[in-house]
Length: 137
View 1 (cartoon, rainbow, N blue to C red):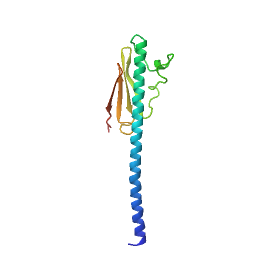
View 2: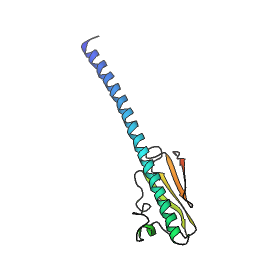
View 3: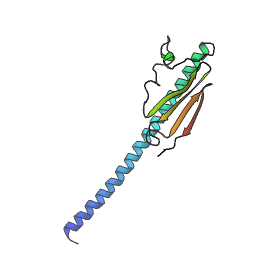
View 4: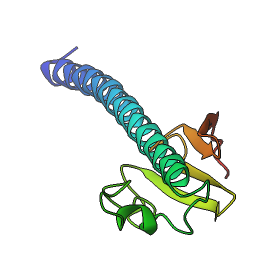
């Protein structure tokens, strides 16, 4: 084998090793980001649920008509309107049901398995559940 052949072989081995290390590093970064996004989403949704329950407790068990109502009281039940500011940290926040008798709010990843792997739901009684999201192709 000549010198050029050896140099090419070394270059290919170094390239393959670098690609392997980069693949592992990117995978770890995505996993870390997903974990952080899920933790933030769960925390925000629990905070929204608690704020809604506290509001109802202070208002004869009547829930507000919007999340914005929670930010406009003095003192506010929430420091910001997370639904209006959605998406945040890889998650979309919605309240599919927000009426005087109860509520149901959720946080879903913008891209399943990339920004998060779980969908979080909080409903009347501050019942908090999570379920796996499935990528729909």
